[in-house]
Amino acid sequence: MIRRRPFSSLMIVLMLALLGWVWHERANLQAFPDIIAAYTAKEYCSCRYVQGNPAEYCQGYVKQYVPTSAFVDNTEKRLVIVSGLGRTHSAQWLDERQGCRLTP
Image (cartoon, rainbow, N blue to C red):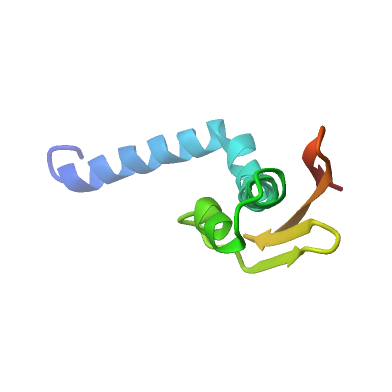
Protein backbone atom coordinates (compact mmCIF):
# COMPACT_ATOMS: atom_id res chain seq x y z
CA MET A 1 0.00 0.00 0.00
CA ILE A 2 2.78 2.45 0.88
CA ARG A 3 4.68 1.81 -2.35
CA ARG A 4 1.57 2.32 -4.47
CA ARG A 5 0.37 5.49 -2.74
CA PRO A 6 3.24 7.20 -0.89
CA PHE A 7 1.59 10.64 -0.72
CA SER A 8 -1.71 9.29 0.59
CA SER A 9 0.11 7.24 3.19
CA LEU A 10 2.18 10.25 4.26
CA MET A 11 -0.96 12.38 4.58
CA ILE A 12 -2.65 9.74 6.74
CA VAL A 13 0.39 9.56 9.02
CA LEU A 14 0.51 13.37 9.28
CA MET A 15 -3.21 13.55 10.09
CA LEU A 16 -2.82 10.93 12.81
CA ALA A 17 0.13 12.85 14.26
CA LEU A 18 -1.88 16.08 14.20
CA LEU A 19 -4.85 14.44 15.92
CA GLY A 20 -2.51 12.99 18.55
CA TRP A 21 -1.01 16.42 19.21
CA VAL A 22 -4.47 18.06 19.44
CA TRP A 23 -5.59 15.39 21.92
CA HIS A 24 -2.44 15.89 24.00
CA GLU A 25 -2.87 19.69 24.06
CA ARG A 26 -6.68 19.73 24.42
CA ALA A 27 -6.69 21.54 27.79
CA ASN A 28 -4.41 24.30 26.50
CA LEU A 29 -6.40 24.66 23.29
CA GLN A 30 -9.65 25.01 25.27
CA ALA A 31 -8.12 27.76 27.43
CA PHE A 32 -6.86 29.79 24.45
CA PRO A 33 -10.07 31.81 23.80
CA ASP A 34 -10.09 33.01 27.43
CA ILE A 35 -6.46 34.07 27.26
CA ILE A 36 -6.99 36.51 24.37
CA ALA A 37 -9.71 38.60 26.05
CA ALA A 38 -8.26 38.39 29.56
CA TYR A 39 -4.74 39.36 28.46
CA THR A 40 -6.00 42.29 26.43
CA ALA A 41 -8.22 43.64 29.23
CA LYS A 42 -5.55 43.28 31.94
CA GLU A 43 -2.66 44.67 29.92
CA TYR A 44 -4.69 47.60 28.57
CA CYS A 45 -5.89 48.45 32.08
CA SER A 46 -2.33 48.36 33.41
CA CYS A 47 -0.98 50.40 30.51
CA ARG A 48 -3.71 53.02 30.75
CA TYR A 49 -4.38 53.40 34.47
CA VAL A 50 -1.27 52.14 36.24
CA GLN A 51 1.34 53.57 33.88
CA GLY A 52 -0.79 56.54 32.78
CA ASN A 53 -0.22 56.17 29.03
CA PRO A 54 -2.64 57.61 26.45
CA ALA A 55 -5.42 55.39 25.10
CA GLU A 56 -4.04 55.29 21.54
CA TYR A 57 -0.66 54.03 22.75
CA CYS A 58 -2.22 51.34 24.95
CA GLN A 59 -4.45 50.09 22.13
CA GLY A 60 -1.37 49.60 19.98
CA TYR A 61 0.45 47.99 22.90
CA VAL A 62 -2.17 45.25 23.39
CA LYS A 63 -2.96 44.67 19.69
CA GLN A 64 -2.62 41.01 18.72
CA TYR A 65 -2.89 38.90 15.59
CA VAL A 66 -6.17 37.47 16.87
CA PRO A 67 -8.66 40.35 16.74
CA THR A 68 -11.02 41.29 19.54
CA SER A 69 -14.69 41.78 18.70
CA ALA A 70 -15.62 44.36 21.36
CA PHE A 71 -13.59 46.82 23.41
CA VAL A 72 -14.97 49.19 26.08
CA ASP A 73 -12.84 51.59 28.13
CA ASN A 74 -14.91 53.21 30.91
CA THR A 75 -12.62 55.98 32.15
CA GLU A 76 -14.95 57.03 34.99
CA LYS A 77 -14.90 53.57 36.62
CA ARG A 78 -11.47 52.71 35.22
CA LEU A 79 -12.96 49.52 33.85
CA VAL A 80 -11.93 47.77 30.64
CA ILE A 81 -14.19 45.16 28.99
CA VAL A 82 -12.88 43.09 26.08
CA SER A 83 -14.56 40.37 24.01
CA GLY A 84 -12.71 38.02 21.73
CA LEU A 85 -13.24 34.52 20.36
CA GLY A 86 -16.65 34.34 22.03
CA ARG A 87 -15.41 35.14 25.55
CA THR A 88 -15.69 38.40 27.51
CA HIS A 89 -13.37 39.52 30.30
CA SER A 90 -12.99 42.73 32.25
CA ALA A 91 -10.26 44.34 34.29
CA GLN A 92 -10.62 47.20 36.76
CA TRP A 93 -8.12 49.51 38.40
CA LEU A 94 -8.30 49.07 42.18
CA ASP A 95 -5.78 51.53 43.61
CA GLU A 96 -2.16 52.67 43.29
CA ARG A 97 -0.86 49.79 45.39
CA GLN A 98 -2.80 46.93 43.78
CA GLY A 99 -3.07 48.18 40.21
CA CYS A 100 -5.49 46.38 37.88
CA ARG A 101 -7.24 43.08 38.48
CA LEU A 102 -9.39 40.84 36.32
CA THR A 103 -12.97 40.98 37.57
CA PRO A 104 -15.32 38.01 37.63
